[in-house]
Amino acid sequence: MKQEPESDKRLPSRRIADDLRASIERGDLASGAKLPSERDLAAQYGTARNTAREAISILQGEGLVVAQHGRGVFVRPQQPLMRLGSNRYSRRLRGETGLSPFRIEVTKQGRTPKTECRSVTKEQAPEDVAERLGLDSGNATVVRRENWYFADDEPVQVGVTYIPVEVAGDSPLASAKTLGKGSIYARFEELGYPIARIREEISARMPNPDEMAGLGMPPGVPVIEVLHTGFDEQRRPFEVTRFVMRGDLNGLDYDMPVED
Image 1 (tube, rainbow, N blue to C red):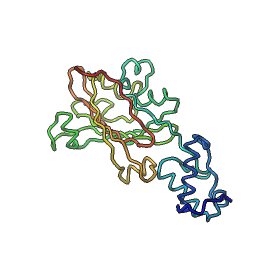
Image 2: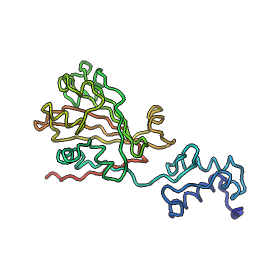
Image 3: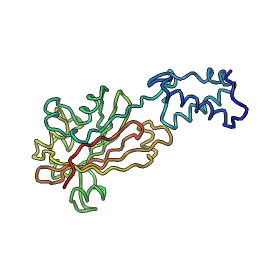
Image 4: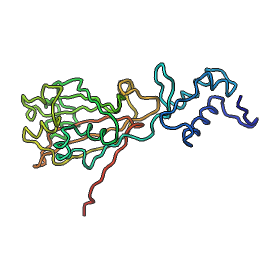
């Protein structure tokens, strides 16, 4: 049984969580390592299993560990999935790989990408989307494409793309869930809208209940919201995508020139 100084006034669950956190930070419990079971932690610290469970819940709330059903609790990999803003829309990379920007990024970082297009519908454009597309607010119909993104089968972000119906026309963008080689930006280019410039507005907030459930998020973890607008060579906006990304699994990496 682990002995603690009599002056230690921490709750037992907090003491266990602090010790485990320190082991993770030192590397004694490495990325992907399995934590001791609740039974073993309770025996080690002379507490009830419920106390050990509370300690593990503290670490889950901090995003340090993840529970895998039937297997146990593991240290979460601490290397975030980086969004490489400087070259993720590169025509050269898309041509060489035939992949979408997300698949290119995830593959480059040694992980396995997967995407799911869950719906393709037509609806009125949200006000902020209409503004960025230069459409009449409250009177503009857009194609809405909802995509979910996974790395190593773990959900990491959701993206909802809005396309003016005049741009999508009767192309696959307006109806097909699978867009083929080069994905969405290859189809835009075929329609005369090669992506030449982007604007990305980045903010952070707490997730709503649907986002928490869909992304499998632990309590207390924020999301990163990226409101992306794509422009063609004439600087015409032709698509807006709202990305909602798990804050504990994603990072942003932008490399760009500084204007005079």
